[in-house]
Each structure stands twice: as C-alpha cells, then as structure tokens.
Length: 558
Ligand SMILES: Nc1nc2c(c(=O)[nH]1)N[C@H]1C(S)=C(S)[C@@H](COP(=O)(O)O)O[C@H]1N2
Ligand SMILES: [Mo]
Image 1: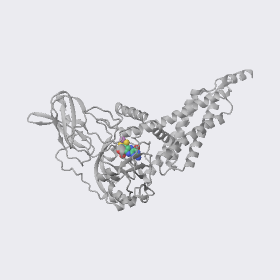
Image 2 (image 1 turned 30 degrees about the horizontal axis):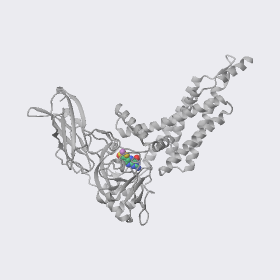
Image 3 (image 1 turned 30 degrees about the vertical axis):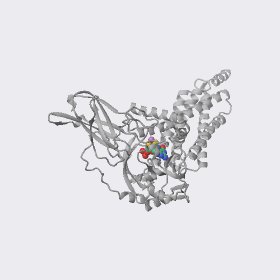
Image 4 (image 1 turned 60 degrees about the vertical axis):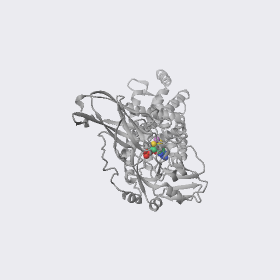
C-alpha cells in the first residue's frame, strides 16, 4: 500500500507538460475544423479559419500584407506551384487553417500549464479555455461579418452559439486528455501503479482525431457538391447573354500566334483571380438588389432582372491585369465582358448637380471610387454581369462588377452591392494600403516563347519564331521590338488584337544561330511612347522594365 501511494505521488509529479498540451490542442483542432466545415456546407455556419484569415487580411497593416503576398508569390515561382492566383488562394487557405491549428496548440499548451500548477477541476479550467477561445473567434467572425455584408450566411446568434459550443467541447476533450494522461492506474500483472503510456495514448487520440476529420471532410465535400448542383443562375441572364456573336473579331488576322504563346482568349477557368477573402461572397441573385444612394433625387434598389431587361447589353473583349503582376507574370487574362454602358445608367439614376464621384461598395467589404466625369468621357466604362458569355461566376464577381479601361484590377470592384453617389473622392481598399491612387496600367511586353520546335527555313536560313504579348491597358500598341544579344531593336509583327482594350500578340522571326542568346522585348503605345524601361517592382504603381529571356539553343534543337 505504501508502495502504491508513493507511486501515485510519483505519477502526479509527472503530470503532462505544456508541450503535450500543445500537441493535443493542435490534434483536437483538426476534427473541430472538419465539423465547422460540415456546419458551413450544411447550414451556412461560419468557418473559423477563413474568417480569421480574412480578418487578419483586413486589420494587418498594408505593408505586412504586401510582404506576406510577396513571400507567397516567391514560393509559387520558386517551387513552380502552377498558376499564381489559384496557388496563392490555396496557400492562403492552408495558412488560415494552420493559424487556427497553431492557436489551438498554443491554447492547449497554456491550459496544460495552468493545470500543472492548479491541478483541481481540469474539466472546468479546460472548458473555460475552450469557451474563451470560442468567444474570441465568434467576435472575429462578427467583425468580418459587419465589415463585409456576406449574404446567405446563418444569423449572428446561431453562428455565435455554434462556434462557442464547438470550442467548449474542444476544451472538454482537452481536459479529458489531460485527466487520462495524469491519472495513474493500477497494473494487475505487475501489481503496481503506473502512468498511462503516453505514446500509445497520443496514437489513439490521433486516430480518433483523424477519423472525425476524414468523416467530416467527406460529408462536407458531398454537401458542397450537392450545393453546387442546386444553385442556378437567373434565367433572364442566360438568354440575354446567349444572343452574343460567337466569332472572335480577329478570326481572319494574318499574323498567327507563335506556338507556345499564352492563349489570346483566356479559358474562363484559367482566368486569374484576386480577392481579399478566402472564399468569394455567396450572393443570391433572386433577392439581390443594387442600392444606389447618396446624391440622387431618390435612392434606388434595383433587381437583377430590372437591369437585364431594361438595358441593351454591350460586350467588349478586355484584358485585365493585377497591379501585382510581375513582368512576365500570369496575373493578367483576357475574356469577353458583357454589361451595360455605365453612362446610360447614370442618366437614369437622377444624380443631383453636385455629384462628382461614385463609391462602389462590394459584398466583401472592398470599395473603390470612380470619377463621374470619367464615366461620361469614356462610354466603354461598363457595369458588367457576364464574362465569356455566361453570368459572372461567384469567383469573378456575381452578380455585378465594373469595367474601367486602362486601370489595373484593383480599381475595379466585383460583387458590387451599393453605389454611393458623392461630391468627394476617397481612398479605395488598396489605395488606403498605399498602392497608387490612379493605378493606370503600365505598358509592358513579354516574351512567352522562343519556339525552336516551330523553326522554318527560308533561302537556306533557319528562322526561329519568338512570340509573346504586349499590353498597355487602353493606350494601344503601335509597335513591338525585339533585340537579340544587345543587337539593334527590330520590329516584330503584330497580330490584330481582339479589341482596343486587350493585349496584342506579336511574333518575331529570329535568324537562328546556335549558342546562348539573350532576347529582349519592348513596345510602344499607339501615341508612340516607349514603354517605361526602368526596372521597377509591382509596388506601388505596377511593374515596369524590359523583359529579358536567356536561352541556350543548339543545332539539334531546331
Ligand atoms: N469586391 C472586390 N473586388 C475586387 C477585388 C476584391 O478583392 N474584392 N480584387 C480586385 C483586384 S486586386 C483585381 S486584380 C481584380 C481581379 O478580378 P478577377 O479575380 O475576377 O480576375 O478584382 C478586383 N476587384
Ligand atoms: Mo489586383
């Protein structure tokens, strides 16, 4: 008996330490997130990791965010993780999840530390810890919600109850683990008191956590598939868009793209995508109303069918680029935009005489300002509802986004829910984070390919076609030139573009010689201005500089 007693004492000294708390806290967070995922898919309940990440993205200083994005893009380039914007989105989502697992581990460690000191009432202590964490996340969720009027989400009360309840259960599970780990048990065979085998216990807990996680992920994924099948875009929208001409306007262009040049018309699912949130807002087209308020005779609430039925649609091929696109990057794409000329809408909205600007407000809390004079000057500015002949997808701004020629993407909100007519200008989302207030597109040109496999022979000389794009927003491209090994700049051939607001594909027939070669490209705008050749990074006004490609080409490659 005396032996057993001292063994118990011994065991108590070996109470699980903070790092076990961290491991178990982290482990238990995985199934918790799987359950959150099921709740999100089944009942639009909040998914904590993404809400937390979105909150961080909004509250951290712009410079910190920029640094983070830079690191992500560097990683994607270094490890060749594929198309930048989708890889970045995936990495962001993983980051959100890791953050929340990390916080679970941290709080688990704190709770075990507390229990080591004050061993009484572990259930109450750990549950309070979990409850506190739940309340913190519920508050963050509330903050994200109020900053971004995401539609079709569960109400505030069920959301708070759900998060707090789940985290409380998480705390209880943690306390159970703590109890099990610290409780000595009597081993009949050895006739002595022993501590539970920690490794075995951790394996058990991992197994349980993994099972719940896998089941939750499976159920959530099924629910997600079921959901995607059941959302249907508005029918009116589909009919109007189906009337558009299908042929590309430059079908007869004489100059053909060099094989290996990026597609002139970007397949919709490959169009780059940049959002400030982990997932796009989920807007219901049936209940959606565009609010127009501020300096108007009467505030308006316009439904989608009203917009689609009362205005003649216009369509335009547009290349859009993110201001964060590096030289030769892939955050630039081309598709066909369909919508309503914005000046026509202004005429109908009854603006008062002192109105000078519109503030476009989006469902995700993003906003930008546009000068009314600009809309009146440029009839191409468009309130757009379709891309590639189909209603805008949730990712790309359903139901409404604006197109403003010659500006980077950051000035062109998606998911517009409100337009405030004002007599002053303000800093939009990225401008407030120190990016260029005007954000006019910088003329750039890019070498996509030195197509050794498409070499041609003329009069005994082998020519290797070199090709790529040149883009200057709406400033036009009058000339593209290539220089090889610092030789003279020579004109490339230009392919007729899809429109005056798309990129221009070019081709240059290079008289082949074997060896290592340095190719450079530059372009001129329609007005004859040379593209800025000074090397500048993306911040704050968009990247500039001559694109250079160095390749080794051998005799046997052509
Ligand atoms: N509401 C909203 N609009 C937005 C953004 C956003 O995060 N939220 N991102 C902007 C940026 S930075 C770019 S580059 C373009 C990208 O549009 P896309 O994702 O449809 O290609 O959308 C712009 N409009
Ligand atoms: Mo962007």
